Image 1 (tube, rainbow, N blue to C red):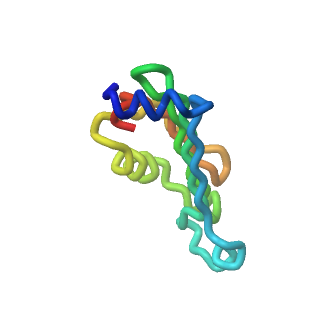
Image 2: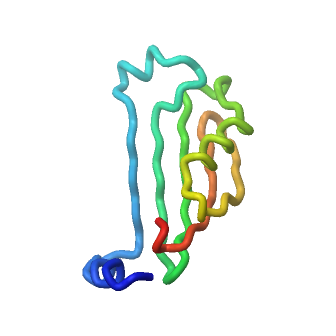
Image 3: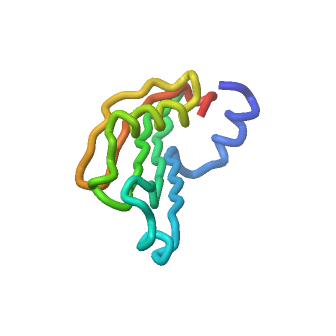
Length: 104
C-alpha cells in the first residue's frame, strides 16, 4: 500500500466498506424485469487484499440473466480484481471478488 492510503486507513475505525444505491419505490414498480433496481458493495480490508461482495437486485427473478450479470460485474470491477463465485437467489445476484487493497 502507498503511504497516503496507509495514513488515511490508520485513521479509519473500521476495515469494512459498504455502499448501497437504489431506485425509488415508484421507479421500481414500473421497471422492466431485467432492470437492476438496487446495487450494493461490501468489502473487508485484510491488509494488502480486500475481499468483497457485489450485490445486484433485479426488478424480477425472470429478468436475471446470470451470465450477463457476471459479465456486467466483471466490467464494473477494476482490472486488478479477481471475480470469484457468482450466484443467484431469486432476484438477487451475489458476486464475490478480491482485489489488491491499494486498487480498491
